[in-house]
Image: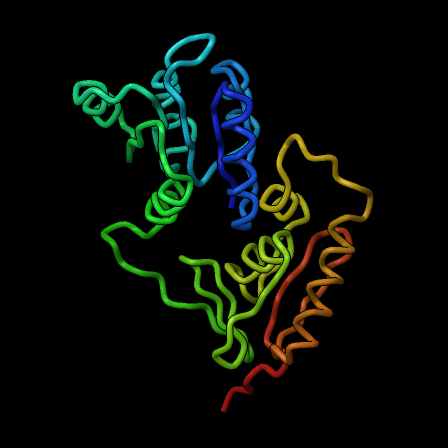
Length: 229
């Protein structure tokens, strides 16, 4: 799951991006409309967090571009323009939410989680494979009812795989879900990450297998699939 952050204040952008990565999301950060617009041609984003006062214009202009290129993306405006008229303008332009600076980082994270919920407030049921259960909304894994602690990228990989149980997820899709555009990716990084996650789940007796499809990607399955009657 990938997030776009458009914010021209370096310190704020860095702190927000750090917290979002800690939550297990991949994030791309840009400080101008032009750079963000170029990224939209290359990537799709589950949610875009947009500042308004940017060096090359009003971030609100990106809303229509995002809606045109990626209709399913959620959009959260993050700005110091706190007048009621400014909020109405942002929501009427197509934004899903509006958070005024200064803000608490945990409120931003709560709003991101809320924006990613299914339409109509319906909560997606946990995905269960073997002894592993994964809450898609909170992105929390459980084995035998006990929460599992995973490293950030292990969690991102598990999230990407478990949303398509028994299906091969391409290497390109996994890299996109795990790493930001500005991150240096070491050779064989995904292979090593998959190996670590596989070992961790085996250690926990999660009852799942992570298969490597050579040249294609990876797939998660039940270690003991039920046989048809």
